[in-house]
Length: 211
Image (cartoon, rainbow, N blue to C red; front, side, top):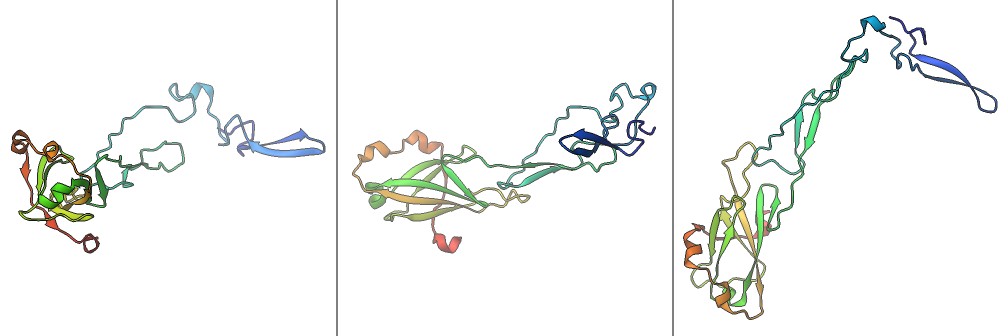
């Protein structure tokens, strides 16, 4: 029914004494600006005539393989509802947590590894634990001399592509050389560790061409 406080206009006019008389128009506090009120006997016992109720709802955000940092997951028409308004969406924006070892650029993965001078000159092998905890044996070709600031790549070991999770690209390994002399016995890989590793093949890449 029509609000008696504002006569259905939803607004009230008040005169306040602030020096010279000042007329101020404001929302009616009886109907909260709607122009209508509900009779006490007709009021809903749940919402008390407010036309909205509070409720808790659990939304499960499914992050698919290959989703990017900043990508949005939208729940249509799940925001707050109110009479005579359009219910908006709830939007979650993914924020990718930094990894201590791997760096992601788009769908590509990059990892840094430092070689000793002996490894760079005489050959190297080391174990790389991937994001899914698989162990990859990374080793140089016979007679190969590694150069400082060199990039190597392993096929099919990068991030899965969004909505094409079985398509994978390259994992790039950036090799740097520590020219200090280090006891090579301290960096040898044990036979037990080697048994746990999967084979991988390194390829030389020009990182500028790859990008």
